[in-house]
Image 1 (cartoon, one colour):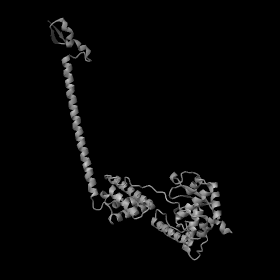
Image 2 (cartoon, one colour; image 1 turned 45 degrees about the vertical axis):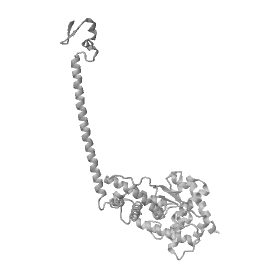
Image 3 (cartoon, one colour; image 1 turned 60 degrees about the horizontal axis):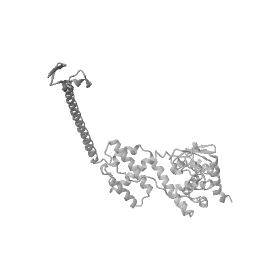
Image 4 (tube, one colour; image 1 turned 180 degrees about the vertical axis):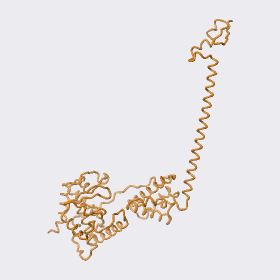
Length: 384
């Protein structure tokens, strides 16, 4: 047996045979060659203790944060529930500011949709927490049973969804997603157009002693002559839009610029109503539609009602509306040219779903030639 001292520690072994089994002799194989076996393991145990303490602190902080989040969630839920259960916090109540800031047509759609929803809810404006998927789905089915058209239903749903989402964002309420699976798309409808011969019947009506019907006919024909100009753009048309032998205007619906060459039949109608010495060419509205939407809407309703009477007087099978002039021109133009791109330009469309082709040109000699041919064909019978 012999003894050996290494780094101040004494070790003993029975014989030289076991020298290679002496652990301290292998210490140089450790990374920290200046640390004894005992101090190394002692250091490692201390590290383990430190990691345990760190893990414990992390768990405590995590638990504290989780409790904080739970408290915030509970408070938000309680806040939302308090608001939902308020006495006067209806969708209509919250949406009033949104409606007041909306433009004429949009504000009107909001009010109409809310009024319809109130009727469905037994003449009581629904409170926010009542607006669930089942509630909206029931309203949707109720509208269909009442015979409301699919496009009108879609318009109601888009308006209500817009108001609901705005209130949810502004008031930070829980979103119950009541409009999921509810269709809000526009549905294709039958194209409403009439023939050349039917246009001639309208032109031939004797209306000298019926000034309202006479003006209604003039507006309808001008809309047709002006490459299907919509009623809203016709109502806002000003003398400033006339530049030389052209009328240039921006569509209210799309903002697209449209340029129309003034034909003889159009000029006669413009001169007829220029005697009123007004800023606008036609005596339809005094102020902008967004400033006085009610007056514009009432004028449109009255116009369509008078058109219906005109159609009956002319013996037409098709119900005459403000859209018929626009659809008729588009149909005749396409038949004469088979060029959807040119027709799209004339109608001022920007949506490819509407015309399939988007066109930037607005001064188009080919287009004016087509319009001249259409008007010549329509007035051919009168010239004989």
